[in-house]
Image (cartoon, rainbow, N blue to C red; front, side, top):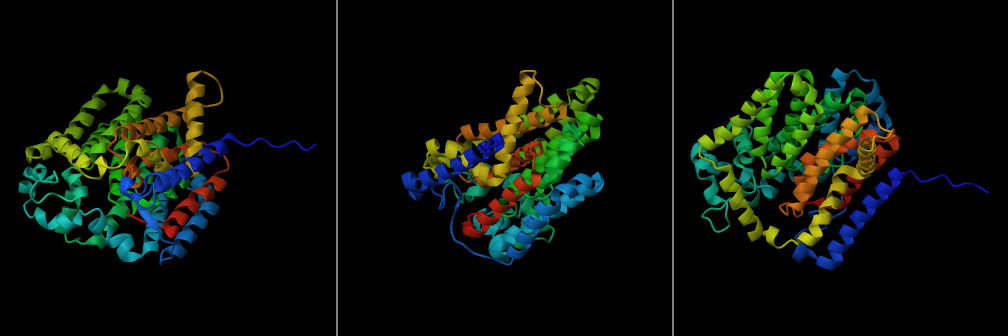
Length: 448
């Protein structure tokens, strides 16, 4: 009698992720409908629309090359060459997926027609005056109220594109190129942090998954990809500062953390990831506690500058909460989105990440119970990933992220992808990873 081989538990996690997405699609379409959820293809913002585009051949080529050679190249390439290679490959993946929808819809028009940042550039002819008056235009009933995405973020988000325009790089094409170029560095930042905190072996194993992330569908089409990279570099510099005892890296990290909080209100939750880094690097902090001084000074720079210019972060946030519930946030049902948001997370991180998170939980549990099966480096990686997952769950429970989390949670998704370093059979999992965004981008007309 033939004995059946046991099914790896990683596959159980992947199947559970598939079932979660399936439930979100079916419940969203047949229980709630558009009027309740205000998304065309729940749980994603978009609509059914199979299509091909100029980026299709390049996307398929990048996917095949990444699966075939990615793990081997990541394992053998010298570290200093691996980082720019990862950045370049990430840009190729993001650009090709964006161009599946063509230049105008896929790149140049997104930040104008969907996220609206470029539509208000002309209102910033006097930057100090606009900052002083920013909160006066957040509420829906206020005069000349800001469009939804401008009102929904601190002014550093819009100001980025205003400054691009002032330097002669105006228009959707330059804005899209900026967002993709900077957003693609996010994977490099995570690699730097993982190497500093958990060792080079795991960083190399994570590299192909970070480069070929399903999240690339949205990294190239929304400003949240840019926000994700800034937040990721804040964490990476903090990891370097505590492992190398460097005040310079600490100051840089603080500066970027401050900027992160003025790009998106929700990214204040990155404090949880920063706390995890400080715990993992507590030996460096104990040996050189002076590192906390440049970190805190750096973190104060952006808030002090915006406050001195007349922008009140706390007042703006409270006004935003009011506006959020006056609009779609007050209509979309919390009882659906509190779990359907997690289905969105599956779609931006892939089935491999679901399996990696299963491994992460097992690694943390084994260490907690003081059992074997996980070495110190794997635990350190699992601890970092767990902090990112905790931050994401906090955002979910807050009720301020109902829908559209395929772009809003890109900053958290980057860190969840690192869990894939704990998996075996990387090529098989990579094949599943690249198949998902290819299907999504060619079968759906995504809203972002």
